[in-house]
Every structure is written in structure tokens, then in C-alpha cells.
Image (tube, rainbow, N blue to C red; front, top):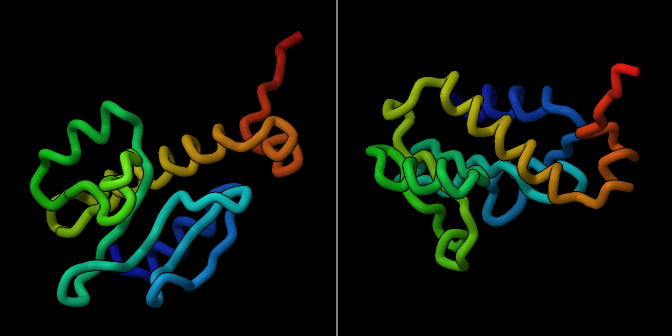
Amino acid sequence: MTYDEFNDFCQALPATTHVVQWGGAQVWKVGGKVFAIGGWGDNDSPAYTFKTSDLDYDVLREQPGFRPAPYLASRGMKWIQQVDASAAADEELKYYLTESHRIVSLGLSKKKQKELGLNQQVHPF
């Protein structure tokens, strides 16, 4: 996945905003909270950082091409960085980006979620 494809995908998720910060990284937020970062790869190679569930973190940190995210994981946060694009298909990365968006959006206040139209359950009756 290229950075342009990464940005296009993240932009298509609900209620997202984009900024370039932290040394030129492509930073995507939902409700003002970061859910994905494109950048910080070694030797200028593409790298994508995202928040994960506890289980996904435990699995991915042992997989080739993935590592605990620099700075974030060392502070106890469950963030993973994909550092080798050949290690995972684009569809797998899209799944983890979507999950990161969901996890971060669920951490927003109920008021903020409603304001952004996120995680609203429709009752069938």
C-alpha cells in the first residue's frame, strides 16, 4: 500500500480528519484522537501504525514485518507498526486500520460519538 492509497482509505472511514505532523507523518484522527499514522519507517520505506486489541497486539508483535510501534508501545499502549509491506496484503492492513478506527471511536464520549454519527445502534423496534 502506498501512502496515497493509505490516505484514500483512511479518508473514506467515517468522521476522519487528516494532519501532517511529527516529522511529516500522515496522521489520521477520529473525534480528535489518532487512529492511524503513515510514516516513521526505517530508511524511508513505508510504515503504517495503528491501535489494536490486546489479542491482535499479542499476535502481530510476533509476526514478520510487524513490530510494537516506536514511542507508543514503549508507553504501554497497544499500537503496532507494519514495517514490511510484503508481510501483509493490503486487505489485511485495511482490516487493522478499520479496527483501529473502531477501537479509538469507542473510546470517545457517548456525546462525541453521537455528534459524529459513530457507533449508533439502531433498535429494530
